[in-house]
Length: 281
Ligand code: ATP
Ligand code: MG
Image (cartoon, rainbow, N blue to C red; front, side, top):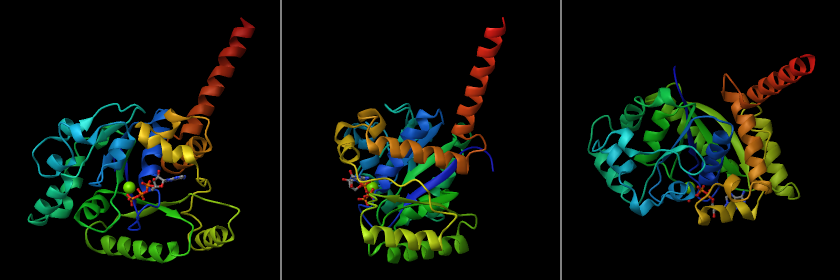
């Protein structure tokens, strides 16, 4: 495999923090100088607006891309405020879903169009809608890994079982290499007994998948999209911004051959060497 690793942010349960995690992880990885492309695969267009791009004035969007009416280069909005690239979406995407249903090989459309740009990025993120439809299926077929975003609450484990079942089905049919890349615990409250119990269950069943970093409930994270900014640009000292930066570092260490922290370390060592040689000279 060459080029970007592709992640689908998924959970058929709505409002769990998929889009917030996708946007803020993309922004944090861009801050670490990683080349990221974010694909908004949800007709709600929340990831588009949260990236600072107006979904109502897109020149071309995921809809035209999936229908083969524009090239991926024409669909990409380069350099959003946080530095990553975006293929934006709006409610027109439901048109593409209907059109795909009439095509053969319909589930491979996104995978096919991504092949042309994969080599340009470190990571490609796909923000999925809260349902298992043709759009989500396209995302899961194009992806190397599923990033599961969840809130540690009563029904979460049931939802996770369904999602793991979906991943197994896709592995058996149209994407044998699909992995569960990681589980992000969001809106995490360590003072809540229920939250800790659910979290313990997750750690027990998925010890290698769960990210150590948790994302707290933080009002800045909820406010940032209304300003069209990822949280690290809206309020970089907020708990939410810091949590996503730490998560991005853990994510990059897990998935990159050149992790951001190692790069930072290499930079520090380089600086030390320069300072030492300056002191000697
Ligand atoms: P959907 O299923 O509709 O696509 P989603 O899973 O993408 O939803 P988000 O849109 O990311 O979920 O989040 C749902 C709501 O919760 C949003 O209003 C968002 O601003 C808020 N939210 C997400 N994460 C946090 C957090 N850590 N702290 C506070 N609010 C949050
Ligand atoms: Mg969403």
